[in-house]
Length: 508
Image (cartoon, rainbow, N blue to C red):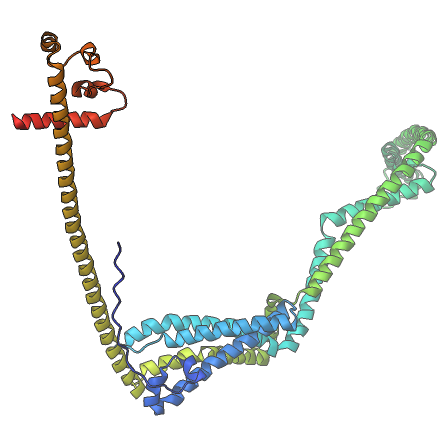
């Protein structure tokens, strides 16, 4: 049985007449009922609501330009996202304005206002950036072209100095050498490039210079000619002339020896070149297609990299490159930089205007609207406390009713249990009395048959005597045997025998 919930008392609410509704008043967060009583303050809050609507509109337009510039979004997609952004900024600005309330101390007002002002300033900077980029669009586009050209040239320089270009140059040299080898019939090494030939030629030049020098010195000693600044020691064929002639002869002998070695080396190289010309030509013809294929692959990769970069560079129209272009253009042009700063500050100020205006209102003298609002808030607070007390009292009464109901149910249940226990005891007594009567009759009936054996077995006749009962009459069961474990009786008979025992003890 459950109790129906106690109805909560109706909470009285203040009666307020219908006030004039206004969308701008709703945006300002002001109470229209109180403004109806202070009509002189109504234009202020309408202007504040208009400022909130203006900032949200600028935010939506800024988002539209941002999506169009950065993502190249379609007009429908950009418009839909801009509407959502407009509603979000509208709701945020309304919360920033309506959450600022007047306090008795200016310090408390500033503690609440500063974080909201910082948040509004942050949103103002974010929202004003796309608008500034759109206003200075031509200057930004012109500077973006210069940036793209510079980036393309820088990438080309990096590409030309990279490992890919080095490998291409090596392959081009190898291709030229292979083509020259094939054109020369397989002569891979010329005799003049052989190291031994080069060494012999150098020795011959040195010996020839030595021979000519000594020959000129001998002529100078003999005839006085070809001295060329030399000192003439004696005229004619003297000792110095003979020494010069000896050195000249030694040089000529060595020249003859080295020329013979040079001839033999050149002939050996020629014969080796003629022998290996076929193998060299075959190897050159085999390697040339491989080198050309590899060179073509690398040149294609280089061209693909250049094309990919140029395509990416041309498609780069995001915020970063636009901001960079605007910074460069403003840095090079003082007038552009000045106007860019002024426009940026103007749009940012417009975005922060609602919160700044509300802070100025709160820092100024209280208006009639503020006084009425404070009075109404106090009354509403007191009314809320009264309603809370009434609801608490109603809850206490409901809890008391539930406690009384539980106590009443417990008392009635105790009475019912007591009556049921009494009836059970009376029934058990009647059953026990009837059992004693039957047991007594049976014992008296069986006692004359065999008194001695009855005394021996302790007051209960054994089974043969019980079986000696008249034919067709089933004697009642012995209570002792029934309690000892007669099949089918169980706990009920044991309890019944306990009841009889208790009655015997009570009678004694």
